[in-house]
Amino acid sequence: MTRFRTEERQAQIIDEAIRIIHEQGYSALAIRELARQVGITEPAIYRHFTSKDEIIAGILDRVLQMSDTLLSDLAGISSAREKIRRFVLFHFDFLSENPEITSVVFSEDIFRLNPILRLKLQKIVDSRYQVLRSFVDEARREGSLVDTDAGDMTILIIGTIRLIVLDWRLSDFDFDLKARGDRILRTLERLIFTEDPELDKQLEGRRE
Amino acid sequence: MTRFRTEERQAQIIDEAIRIIHEQGYSALAIRELARQVGITEPAIYRHFTSKDEIIAGILDRVLQMSDTLLSDLAGISSAREKIRRFVLFHFDFLSENPEITSVVFSEDIFRLNPILRLKLQKIVDSRYQVLRSFVDEARREGSLVDTDAGDMTILIIGTIRLIVLDWRLSDFDFDLKARGDRILRTLERLIFTEDPELDKQLEGRRE
DNA sequence: ATTGCGTTAGTTATCGATCACTAACTAATG
DNA sequence: CATTAGTTAGTGATCGATAACTAACGCAAT
Image (cartoon, rainbow over all chains, first blue to last red):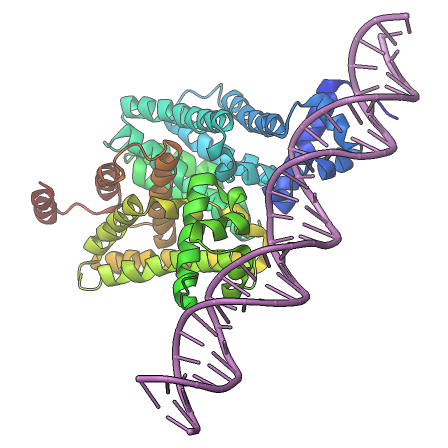
């Protein structure tokens, strides 16, 4: 009988829950099986979470942490244009190494009904939107963005990321997401940024 | 005891199934309740579908029919640029009047596990992609598109549509999707189409 | 037209499996 | 020794699916 402190067990439980959702879908997330995978019994789960919904809430919190990683990753960058670039690349990088997360992100349907989970999901979606939106606004002030609605521009970028990731998921993760992301980023850049031969040359050099 | 021919009943069952998924989520789709809503008993459902999965397959077929409506809607249009415009508007129009369909479209997670359903879903996604892709290729030949990768451009457009629709769903359908669609289409057009003052004037006139 | 009959859409009743969750008890930790 | 992480055993509810039976339809022969 190996005992763990509740924070550790909670983390283990959420890890396993994400893995199960990823491998077998949300409908396969049964407390019994979840407990078995963690190596404890069903009632032991209820020592650490009062209900199944609370476990789901924990999963969403885990996804929300991604935003912190993102922001610290972008901390030192001054150019807004570069921030947008890195925002896009970060998502492909992060999801490439944490594919299980995509299963959570694309399971909106599970959360839509439950008001608490739904609010949490909206918070995640909105937080990501706000982060990018601030960069887009900044880039417009810099003059490095094509003159269009900043909100629409933000939707366009996130929508593109999401669809590439969905495609990756449906293909069973069998293409190189980072490489695909790099390609589509170039297309995006050509569309949304103003011509800047000097900067373009720099970017081109960095890529090789 | 009112009897229906099996094609009629199948249609009724699929209608109700979509409604239940939309209102209560996929996990609430129980054969018993589905039968009750249709006005028959549980085993009667199994007269018309051999399994629950086959009902889901029927739902996906229904969504696939959307492509036919789309294509006939776009039949008489000659300009590729106008076809792309109409492709985008069609989606916002159609989903605006059939919001239940969004619940199916955003429930990829249900289908990912089952190989048959998954293939059906991929077929739907791909068919929509191919349609738009052909317009994008055509527009490039016309010279009305900015010079970028046609595949990426297609992804960008569909991704934008999807994210707007997701946003609409998460907001509980409480903004005017068609108006929002019209707005983002203008942004999209400004980004992807080449400058064409003559055509722009025509389009501007038509909008008012 | 009416009858007779095979086909098919429906019924009632029930199956075993599995779900989330809990009461009551036990052993490890600090 | 108090607290807390774990256990065994079991709750009622609900799931998808089926066996056995019945009533309505459609069509051919009278």
